[in-house]
Image (cartoon, rainbow, N blue to C red):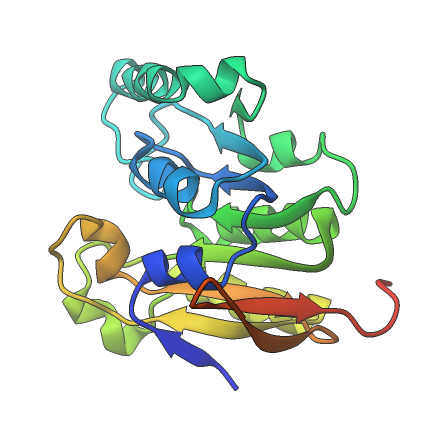
Amino acid sequence: MIEIVEDRTVMLQHWLPHNAVCAEVGVFNGLFSRMIWEHTAPRRLHMIDIWADIGAEGEWCTSDTKAQGNMMTVSRMFVGPIKAGRVALHQGCSANILALFPRAYFDWVYIDADHSYEGVMLDLEASGPLIKQGGLIVGHDYATPEQAQGIRHYYPGVARAVTEFCSRYGWRIICLSKQGDYSGPDIAGRNAPSYILARHRATIRGRTLRGVTHRVISWQGNDN
């Protein structure tokens, strides 16, 4: 059963592990990075982006200068956590950067980089082995053709890649956010649905902490 939530902010607050080792793949100008930081207080956050002009299927930039400006904005935004060793910036092709991490390193990875089918599949395949038992893969822009008309930036390759990845590697969608209006503080995030994936053998149960329901992912079987 797939649970539907209001938006990706709810996912950060109630679904994703807090005080976690996590990665954001596709950082752009850091606005969602700040939401990750504020809502989940990660123990270690790896921010991965090519920060270069790579066209409409990737970062929304028209020049390398603007992309580099975004990277500088992010570095200034997180200067304290970077100095404290809790945030690390990685510039380069996301699949290549992910290949540098050991297996079962991350509690969760958020994917929102190259939105082509090929790009999303590369990031999913690179992320899968890096997720701990009971960990999650999360991403943005999961929209069906039926939703396309109401979405400002529609990328058909995302849903295709997610569906094929789940079928091929034994993952499943456990949560989707609603398609919302192109408005509000998280304007692009609300407009296009986000998704959460868990391995098929993972089970989900609710837990209440300080009056807020959090999801606890437990594991059954070996990770082969």
